[in-house]
Image 1: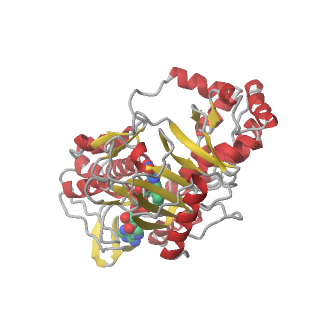
Image 2: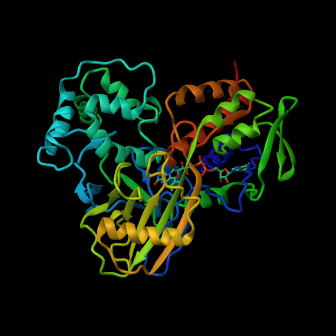
Image 3: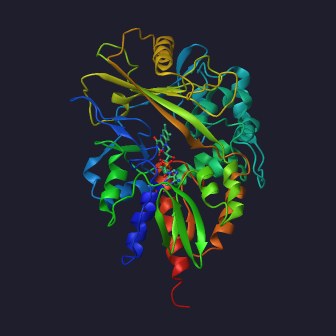
Length: 454
Ligand SMILES: Cc1cc2nc3c(=O)[nH]c(=O)nc-3n(C[C@H](O)[C@H](O)[C@H](O)COP(=O)(O)OP(=O)(O)OC[C@H]3O[C@@H](n4cnc5c(N)ncnc54)[C@H](O)[C@@H]3O)c2cc1C
């Protein structure tokens, strides 16, 4: 998606340039992949399913390529998600922003925390201002401010889900810099609440998707490019050819004026090994392997009303990490012919319950998903259909020091006019982030090749 967004922007900025997208596999979209489902059911996403509406780049691209009529919002009746803890389902408190509960008083009667856990959380309200200049782990920072219990039982489920990582290893500054900003004024709870009040969320759904499947976005962008995407064409190396660049790999060699490299971090490090040796820093970004299992049940299974899904924190005694109730999350098919759920496995926690989703066979997944849904939801019905989608090396891990590592590599890359990096390993893993990143890389390439008057 980052590469396609870059190509789309390059064509806008430099209409006379010839832009070619090289894609190693036989399809565009990378992590974004949708499957057409039987008539009457919802399209099933093999990977991502949501665009965060608050970050405008994705919706703007959807509109620019003529897919606005396909945009659908999350279900207006959806009230939130459940946590699986202590062998039972518990409601997540409303109003948690960046892992911080903005209305901690609503946890008074909640079984989520012990009295000591609540006291640790409330202590944040009197916390003194703190300047966070050096990066620290997101989990350690939150635990110090809000207590270990809140982090282990709630924040880890919410935040590690987004990054499929271990919040005790993820970088505070690369994931939630707004927490460090809030700490400068004292209480995180008060700081984020004040920020919310000053910048209230826009009305409308928090998440949107595309009725025809999210994959229709990269496909449509590719169709709109002047030159068809070259699929099955892995680029192995990028080397200098005078002031230009030579691309080599499963393609006839191609010499170009500028390159946006929107490949996963270890691939980009290899591609640039000769041209920008400092890019080897990208190889230090580890990736988590994930799997999404889509399961369809005949009507009759009991879905907790109004809930979009279930999150399991790393400490929960279950292999899955999350469940999405597809029909209740999205409004576009209020009455599907079946009950589709998505079940997630894998994260980079390396803990005692670490799951190697790449080693599991199809049969193992089927057994595991049946056992897990029985355990968490009490569902014993046989599913109508099960599909396993593995995502090897799918989610880059922004470890402590990430921003600095990326800045060092980007500084070296920027010495070469016409060269730029983009993609999920750099400044944000969400689809809106990678679209913005691809567009910004295109802008840098054009600017550096044609700095303009003066
Ligand atoms: C299971 C899952 C669920 C997610 N859910 C969400 C969600 O709901 N919302 C959200 O916003 N984000 C979500 N994400 C994150 C988001 O989907 C990804 O971070 C984003 O799509 C990555 O885009 P990208 O272009 O940076 O990388 P990729 O999608 O990885 O694309 C990189 C491309 O480079 C190609 N390539 C690799 N090597 C070469 C080579 N040598 N030559 C040429 N091409 C090459 C690959 O084939 C691929 O097409 C999810 C991710 C996963 C895995």
